[in-house]
Length: 67
Image 1 (cartoon, helix red, strand yellow):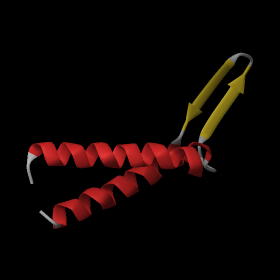
Image 2: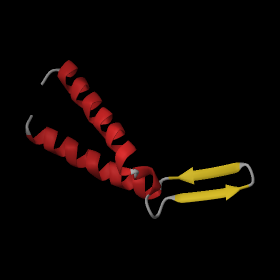
Image 3: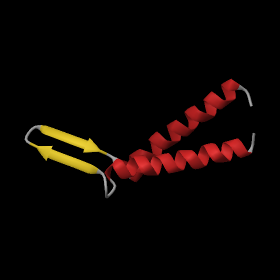
Image 4: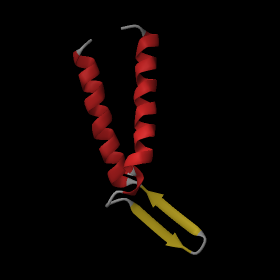
């Protein structure tokens, strides 16, 4: 697989993830840390990061198997 094809696939996967995040509300899962105090908000998406990491790992594992 050429470099340009790999970059296009990675871009497509990132686009698909971004598109799905709008409809699946992945940024507000239980376990994500949110602190609000006055005008300041601290948001750390722990569970969302783990979920995205697992999905991307599976995608890249499957892509590697077809190489």
